[in-house]
Length: 179
Image 1 (tube, one colour):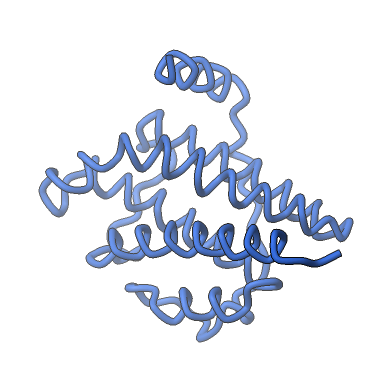
Image 2: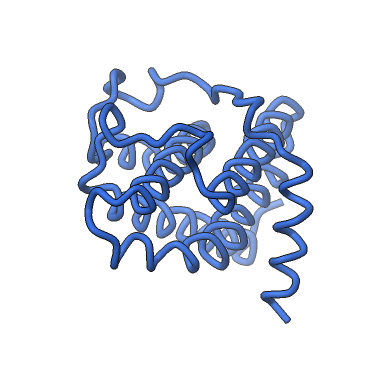
């Protein structure tokens, strides 16, 4: 089925994904992964929690595509962009991004997470929002070996990012924060 309501919903989802990508891109302007990436064991707990969520999201997205559940894919990506990133992580990370000195470890750790999120979102949307994904990839502010998102391949699984015990703690903190 298709109609004005469905088209409006898809347009809204697409806009939210695109706006999230724009924010991520704008905060990576001085980030060079070869020099500035912070190793996982050096990341603060909030960064590791978001990477845990990203690992869950990439798994869910892959399953949704494998089962041709495109509405599940869109819902997963939209929730990650809106709920996990915009409403939570980016809200608490802005201070680190804006007031820290350019090479401060706390700023670079945040940028490391932004890079992983941006690349994963771009790869996730590529099959259905091809032009948006390619536009994002072409504007990555750091060098990548692939000229196109379609040459970059699918997600790389990061098993070390799965931390259910960490997720439980941060889910509780998110509930408290919302109260």
